[in-house]
Image 1 (cartoon, one colour):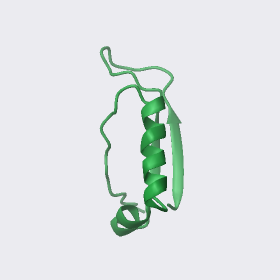
Image 2: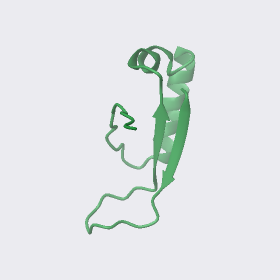
Image 3: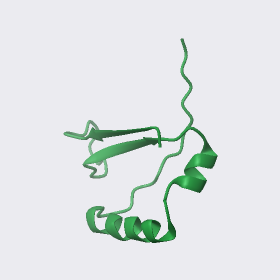
Image 4: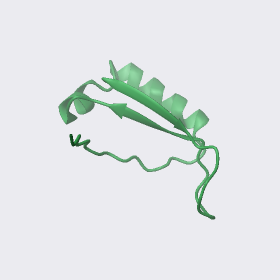
Length: 71
């Protein structure tokens, strides 16, 4: 991972918006790096999945995107 950002949600702008406390962004240099090196081991993967279930009430969808920088 080359960068990690956290965005905290203090208020929603649209009524009926699902509850969310924040959004995190993880940046990887390529899809291959994300797919092959996100977890350092199978044990680390199992631990992260276990921990995630404790602090996320409902699993929200993940969004995968590509960033294009225009100058």
